[in-house]
Length: 197
Image 1 (cartoon, rainbow, N blue to C red):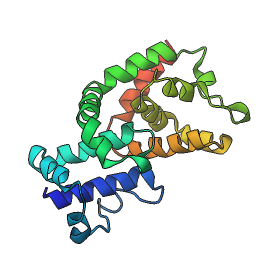
Image 2: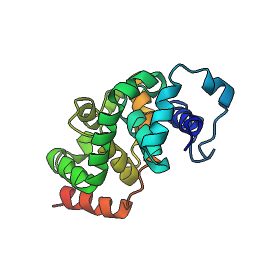
Image 3: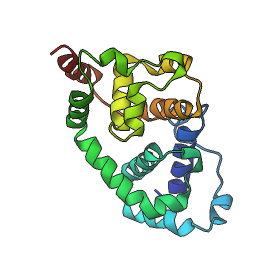
Image 4: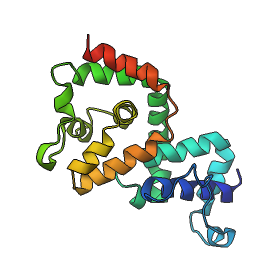
């Protein structure tokens, strides 16, 4: 990728994670940025640097990792990615490479036949235990996404909870789900074994 193409990738992935109406896959990663506006940026050097260091797929993964891991993708500044991006990307790669193990381990710790329904209980608009575990950093975003791919719980939570924390999480789960290419049936079997053991 050229530096300008890296910048376009950055903008389109940022839009995907922060704008409910923009879909990276639907629009083929396209955005309305111009080369003229790109050349006026003070951080152009960083886009030049990353275009030399990473191949096309790594660049996309690098931005996905950083936007998926941040608390507020709309406010994630390129300077933050410059400072912490490589560490975030490295941790994300480790999780991606051991995703099955990570999911199984987290489910074994937090899910059982006895507490399964309670994890998804959001009576009176309160945060369910599942979300609390994520906010406490006891569960990863990947596990939340995989559970949604299996159980489709986000739609139910959307109806029952009206709060900014959940709204941001709902968007993050739905947007990140598009980038997780997994064998849902295989993960469903792992979950069944844990719940019905």
